[in-house]
Image 1: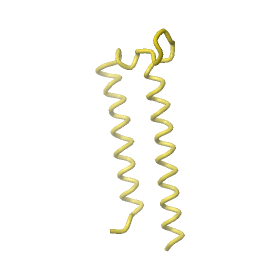
Image 2 (image 1 turned 45 degrees about the vertical axis):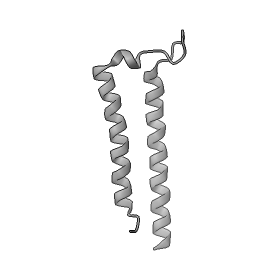
Image 3 (image 1 turned 90 degrees about the vertical axis):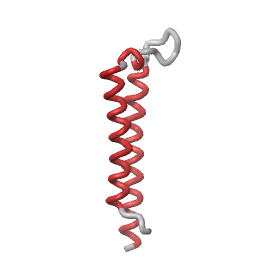
Length: 76
């Protein structure tokens, strides 16, 4: 089966959407979990770490999609 950029895009969208809804679910139903500091006695909480991780994951997924789409277009 040949890789299709549409299917890759939908798969990445589902992956990022699930991470986002997990983040929103934690914010709505367990805010105290994300309010814990990363380092004992520190001021940076898990909110910050999760949000930055979500942003960088979306950047990496976008880059992956662009690389695959360009490679498939060059091959065609």
